[in-house]
Image (cartoon, rainbow, N blue to C red):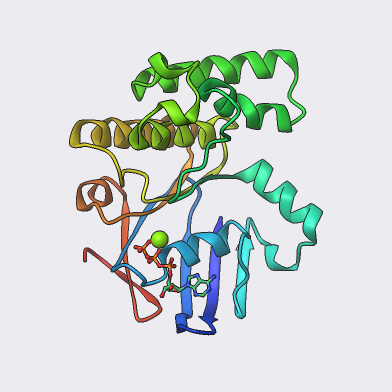
Amino acid sequence: MLTLKNISKSFLQRGVVLKDLDLTVNEGDTVSVSGPSGSGKTTLLNIIGLLDRPDSGEVLFRGEKVLGYNQDESALYRNRNIGFVFQDHLLLPYLTVLENILLPLLATKASDQDYRQKADEARRMMEKTGITGIASKYPYQISGGEAQRATLVRALVNQPSVLLADEPTGSLDRRNAENLGDLLTDMNREYGTTLILATHSQELADRMKLQYSLSEGKLTDGKH
Ligand SMILES: Nc1ncnc2c1ncn2[C@@H]1O[C@H](COP(=O)(O)OP(=O)(O)OP(=O)(O)O)[C@@H](O)[C@H]1O
Ligand SMILES: [Mg+2]
């Protein structure tokens, strides 16, 4: 469903980050990308999510060349297909946790029935990740780990075909990291959500079907 061909990316002060990188992800795959800090994991996810552009190379999503999309088409691609969990989880400060989570539903033209179904599912995911109790709190009142789980539920609420998650368990203790891993694998099983995770956690990587390591600008198979 997703093919990256010869992707290269450099930053002025840093030099080459990604170098002729290739990646093929099939519908429903689960993929982990490990690698040292600064190896380019976030850069890679940003390129797939069209938040950054490579210097050269091709990104194909279901056969379409997405790098040629204009701004509107890029936004549509993201809204329809991609859920994003950022490394520096951002919740809007003036909305409650529940409002933050349901926000993506307001951005799509869902029918009432569709809205209700997805809102119910969001509540189920909140229960699963143990954040039901903070639904009506504001971001400044919750912990980093709670914010991380809320941003994951928010990314999943539109049932995206691909979830890009950058260090989703970064600030979670062991038990919550496990629950979050459960939620991710549930989503993959129940909805066929394709998962692409950047993670330093070997436990989380071990739960993915395909495990890649990023070093010297390229992905290699296997554990790091
Ligand atoms: N916008 C930018 N401008 C300049 N340099 C950047 C930019 N974004 C990333 N870099 C550099 O590119 C390299 C790769 O960064 P990236 O954030 O992709 O690494 P990472 O693998 O996600 O690291 P971490 O594990 O710490 O999150 C780093 O050296 C970083 O400083
Ligand atoms: Mg990163």
